[in-house]
Image (cartoon, rainbow, N blue to C red):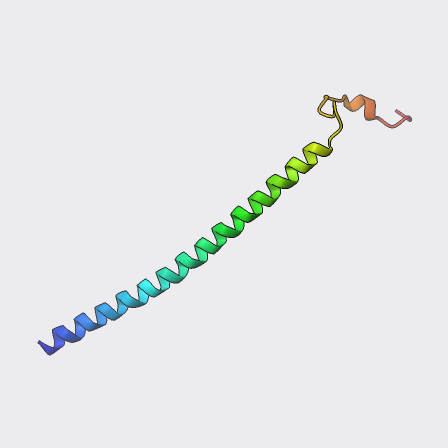
Amino acid sequence: MDDARQRLDARIEALEVKVAFTEDMLDQLNLTIYRQQQQIEQLTREVVQLRQQQPEGGGAVRSLRDELPPHY
């Protein structure tokens, strides 16, 4: 009976350790997701600003031939 109790205590302790590590990992993942979301929002704001800075008609397709240096 005492041996069964020790095995049960050992299993419970092992589970408690796993739960502690799992909680820590979950906290780290949540922080990572939060930081990534912040970065996505910042990049989205920057894209919006860049689009606002683009002159009208700036989206027109240009030919690469127009950009050849004069010696060609």
